[in-house]
Image (tube, rainbow, N blue to C red; front, side, top):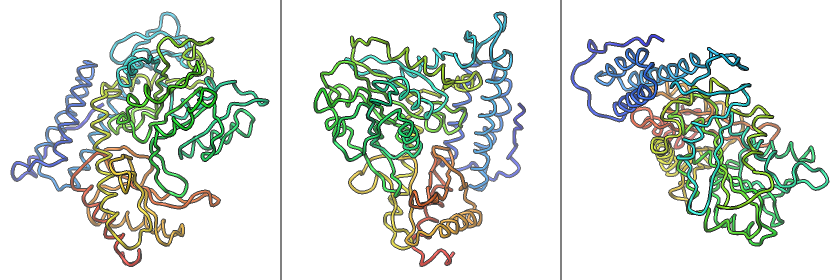
Length: 475
């Protein structure tokens, strides 16, 4: 790939003042240096990219132009990573011959007969350092093609009693992720599970917990994990055999260490605790290199099972084709993926920007009926990678108008604010979520990214102005 270095000298007046976007230049250069250290063959394509980042670091551009260049160069680094992955995987068939070369971009050999049977041992070793087992526990670590593929395989392979329509496993979901809800509803309709209500006290075999979640009315909840485990592990009979903690929204900043030894203490032999998450956003520096589900399976040291649960989970991954493909595996060789320190720093920047937006909006009276984020109210200090905003007049057409206002005003004010879904990017996004057949309350989701500075501050000011206005038509 040819990354054209840009000479900004002709537009430069004096040395630029230090501000957050210049800090991001150095952060990008560090990612490039880390990549070259892991994969020396990347030096050729990184050379012109480094020159472009260096030229930008010394440029005196308008803030919106500076941020646009940051986005362009971040995407260029992403393409370099994906190009290296394809160079490695394209040499072999998806079911290689014995003489075919199958190796990762960093040169490490990997052997497999079929792509769906790949076992990513090196990356799973990184995950072991990323989510280590606390004292008294042992862990197995797995990567899947997505967080949802991981959830499906966990329920398929590890739910007690298996998919037995006469006596299906009882599952309680204390969370709000809509795709988990829909997966459970589908399995329930086929008799594979019996889904229990959130409010009930009847015993569950499987407990799915989300530390932070938003419900279908756009209300935020911070789950008391200790209370949830105590409530459902009060007796040996009541202790779920499988506890799944979905930490996607809190990412690498969620720590199970203080929870595991003290709370999961039922005497019944044979239960497991799983930490799982989607590793696409907060774990990849906002570059979306590849979909991936992260799973860490914990059990007490010395705990014996008739059939090893780790082997059952591996088998389910292979049979369902839920493992990482060769291309994805190569892309995730990027050294910052599953780097605990880097991931936590990146996620904290995302959380800080969203908490700042939520705090500012909570001080505004006017068009907004509700601002939802776990840092507000009694949950002060809790994190989430986006903020939900509801209008006093919540007709769907008003949310469409809201999007139009944000698009126009962002352009007029020279702000980098993109319409789009998901969260955890370097830049900032918004999206109206409208009801389907009345299933949810409409809301606007604003996902502030990791970048501080011009656009972040301008977006917060813009949303506060809209919130204080008499009507959307005032804009």
